[in-house]
Image (cartoon, rainbow, N blue to C red; front, side, top):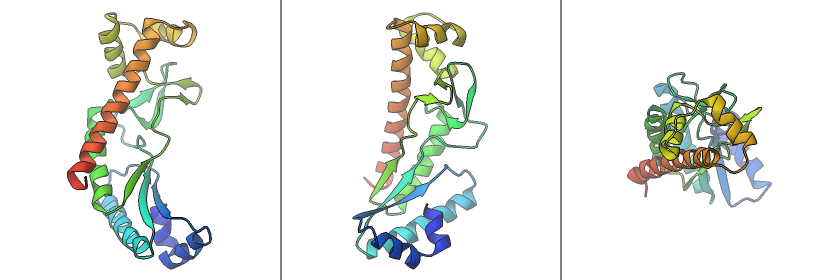
Amino acid sequence: MNSTVTKVGREETLAEVKKFAPKRVLLAFETLNEDKAIRKAEFENLRVNTEFFKAHGYEVGAWIVPLNSRNEAYQDMIKINGNPVKGLKCPSCEGFRAFAKEYYKGLAESGVDMILIDDGFRYSILGEAPACLCPWHLKEIERLTGEAKTVDELREYIIKGGKNKYRDAWLTANGNAMRLFAKDMRDAVNEVNP
């Protein structure tokens, strides 16, 4: 964790890193922090940590879980059982994407060589059910199929219906949201450090 390097100490962390002889160091972020003062401090720590490890010959990256946020204003992913996935935001949410773009710019401004997106960038099994059937996804599925369906109606098609137009539309909608998020984050990073 980026914060751990600062708490434990850079020299102590470097001594541990050297035991493994890596070529790069990844500094992890668990959640996208919305508090501007905390975020400013996190990015300053990242900048200093990045300079420190680069000075010792390492390539440095920020490792981020891309969809984590505690902000209730953003759309949580909705599992096909209709329950929210608390803390994991749907990448279709415009407000969340706007915030995440600023966050990614902050990461890029720190001077890291790369931003590694954790495997949390997915709609797979999240607890007892896959996601997402939030309002955006329902509208996108309707656009793709020409039919409005409820979460309860879609659930049966998605998990029990075999190959069908509703399952295909659900998968397409998920892919569209992921690609939209990824493009927005790439564009944000390119504004700072192409």
